[in-house]
Length: 607
Image (cartoon, rainbow, N blue to C red):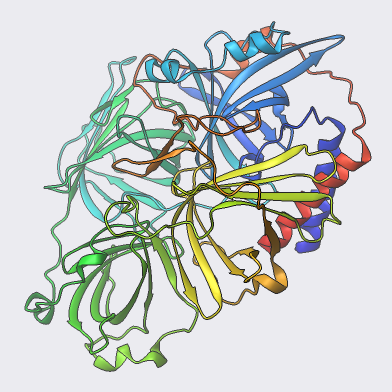
């Protein structure tokens, strides 16, 4: 499989190199094959396929220049060319949103780079909704692998009230009794829907597969579903809202594959669902009588868990199970707890929860072997795996009080990426007064920038002679966390290696990682990005940054409004788009080789 991926990558780089347009590249997370809504004919939605590689976005041309999340795309027609500006936002690993001004999609007459920049979406236009938005749904990733399903934020078992209010037809379908149900069994990536007692008299059963979810500007909760019904759009956008006190969920869907058409809020849409939680099975007597609580430092919301007194809810994204875990008894070891667990499908068992506080904003845990009865021996270390830790970061980091610096380094470090034959150079820098790290990859010869990433440090800890740093990545989809393992020598040499999502333990950064040398001239940057904390996640607001390349600018959050935005249909606007017949110029050999190194190294990291 590794050989096949490498061959695919070589051909990909070859063709990408032929059309490379300056130092503007799309991140690997953006690349792949997508489908998008192309036209709506009556009740039917048609889709078109679009591919994004390192330098090109399908029909819209080559990446000419990047300014933060805004990309200038150039396409040629004969001897002339034109430039459009798109704002790209990765909503989840499977959903990419492209936003542009309302007059820029179907017509491309701008030949000046400066004029094109003036059409880029601004914070004001994103807030007002005076833009055109295009949702792309990924079907294959950069390695030609089929995209994987995602965990659905709606789990459990519910009774449901359903309404289909088709404003274009007098036919209204309502299922108002409590006989209709929704559940996420056996997989938390799928909602199984069974509608009964409807005014049409038929029993309807279908599924919603979750493709991704995200939070909007006004704290709306969006989900993209794959709809199994034959006479419905395949891809559906939903907005939902959960009542904290009752657990009820209100959800509405649009009429097509956009988040606009006949979709206004969680209670007003083309289709609406009211989910009423089914009564829970009583907890066992020994659990109801327990006085055990999880420690104060654990309380709150983490990536995949939330803790409230004696209850921990864990969404396992590998098994697609949601476990409600109740504290049964504290073990003699202060960081082990006998617990009783119940899944969203009412699967029950006893086990031991082993927890470590790595920092104020990082915890790691393991769950022991399962048992059908309460057994204190479950907390013996023989029931755990040595390296099976699950790393979790707080969704709202603690940044006040006696909190040590969360980034382990300050200043600027440079190095050469291993196996690149000294072609690729890396730059890692962090400010003394903030918790932000910037990572860049560029040509060691020309300085041309190929990739840049932005991280917020959540904390670090030491095990043996290795330093682990847990971060939240800010330049891709929200909720993306990455771990790094490193070693810092007395000579200020830093060896660093990616350690996956859960801080993999069997990695030697000195042997397999990259060496970074501290720049004595640059120790700290002044007036760097300020770390602001919001309700859901840390944000970065830029006051006055130090000198940075033109490919980097203010991080902008795309915020959706409900009805003023205009969806775009591909086929309806193609008449004004010039056919892309650009003459492919051969890129120079060094640029192709550099791209090949990037791809090969990326593959090595993922094997």
